[in-house]
Length: 448
Image (cartoon, rainbow, N blue to C red; front, top):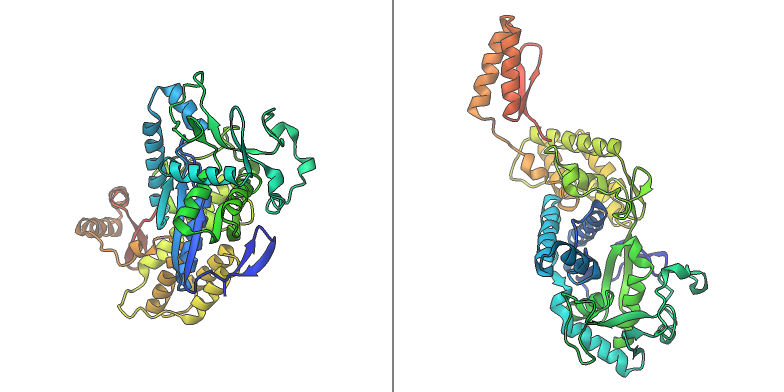
């Protein structure tokens, strides 16, 4: 049984899917106006982890992730650069996909883009208008929050204590907190991304896209909805309100939110300029999976403080794991230690506790298990961890490296240390290192 923390109820609950062995899951993806930062990638890694844990438990997962390719930020970048909006969104979408690949994140069952679901968004808005839950003004169509009394259940906010500075002042709105479903374009804006609609040319509000895509692809009620912690305050409550008012059904059974990622104990923000993209962290040719390892080292509901020291520790730990795997013997038995796997799964099924699961992984690494059983156990765990251990199993040592090592050993025995050191450096250039022993030496592949 999987137990998880439901952000909506603020309680640990048993996970019971709508269908026996099939799980529907929706994850809020990035807005593609800039390179995705590592906070975005933490959420993506968490979403990938949840899907892997579900599959490890024998479920079939229908997971959807959206790409927001329709946003005021995209309009701004397009106007600043003079490039078509479609070129900008394609470039940053491709960058995001590349980052996912480097982090060994599996693409979901379906990726949806806001611009490809305009009709579906307009349909939901029309239903809300017909039900009297939405209303039209001179500048757009808005959701009337007074028609949905459960709006603040997820965020747990007191509407009377919300900072008024965060609310867009608009005399057209019935209530200050009402949010836009559709905005009308004006000639002065000269927008690059707007569309015809039954109410006039314009563009959808940010929130309606996720309702349209989730309902279209996964149905009126879905099992799991994931996203970053910041979305719990406004975006996800808006999704719930508009979806449930359209269908009359519960929108999501379990809400999961990944906590914030801080940089050196300060909130990471593009506006503050203290953020990293994946390229920054692997500029020296480092292994991007060290970033994944860092994410997994903390449970998803705990804020993660990203520091140089912590990242170096993750690099070292991952290298140690690769080094160990490279020395283990391979066979075709596929037998693993059931006790370790049972404990590993128990940790993951306890609200996706990757910190505990990694601890059990390292217990297996240092255990006295037979080599083949140990290797198969670690590879089984890696089906969830996604550290790509299989790539480091059973490597061959090139003949050139073997000959250089033999020559170096002869130089060393003769006391010609300058040439021996030169040979060592040549060996290292080829991705190996020499470990000297009492009367011999060992060659080992170097993993970054």
